[in-house]
Image (cartoon, rainbow, N blue to C red; front, side):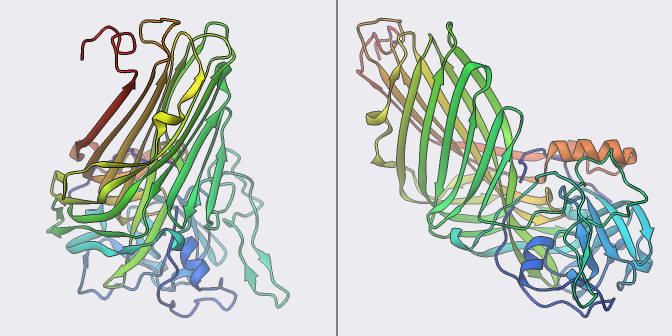
Length: 484
């Protein structure tokens, strides 16, 4: 059957609205609990009605929902299932597993131990699961109802018995007599969703979360003699996401629908250099968390999820050079983007209303000049799959904010300040996955490469819809000698 593309877009990192329906009875009397918190963490139960969406012939539905799931690895690739759950007897390598909204993917490895079974999943395309039907998410999303779920690594924790003898699994279940030290991404349980998430690498601290007025995220580092802090908030009271595609005979049409309600952006930028000759830094990464919201289509769990990619580009000349600036802009009218196949457009022409002027706030010490550009892309995807392996159609909101201080001609007699704001929209279909998780999965199970969706079928497009730039004073010294 046709395979869909592998598109490495997102970041590490996810959110859920409260739960949906209750699950079928447990297949074991000591099975895990099943309820709203479990659905948020492990996905809503799959109960396909066989009519609304026609699934592919090699899809195996495992019944019991959360009751059949004893745990999952922190990277979302390995699931420990109740070996007695309905449908488990039909599960085999290369089948498509559909157990919950996140326990979904192509089976590449099965290990049975007692009444439990470890199942390793690989990414799938939307058409690997669905043969015919319309996959569409259509509902309001409010920021204060969302939760973040992120990848965080760590150490193995075993399921622990309650006082009554039943099991309350707190982690990915792995027997002590078969440890796997070469499995760095499955050594801690899938995190419990929360309002805030933070992750530290060797040089960077990455964080994000939800608030009443939108989604916020930040990056900071003290690498290479340069201190950088950047934070941004995507402002909205309620987004309405209507995004999906029609699948006919295992072929998906383009993305269609509308995303509306984005109100504006708020940023805070700070950078400083301690190097004698100045410092530069340029970094692009996906933040290690995502924000999923679940729904059911004919009993098949479908999500809309947010992922974020960030670009930092800063350069400061001279010792103890600094630059700071903060601003907030609202759109003239809440943004509504319409999506039709590979075309994406703003429904109205966009303008910016300055709430807090970043130009007025720019300050610093940089005789030779200093610049700081922070770019971010928030991708909203409707689709299916395990955490960090989402497949489907998506829309993106892309913003870059830049500030500068110092003369373009290096003059010590002019204090030049500049600010820029760019906004673009994107759309497409494919897979949003964490690259490091995919790399680790390929190292553990090399034949995964043979079943990955086809990269060559990737489809995505972007369109610039707004550009603003201001320089003060507006003269030849600050504009580099240009007359305009």
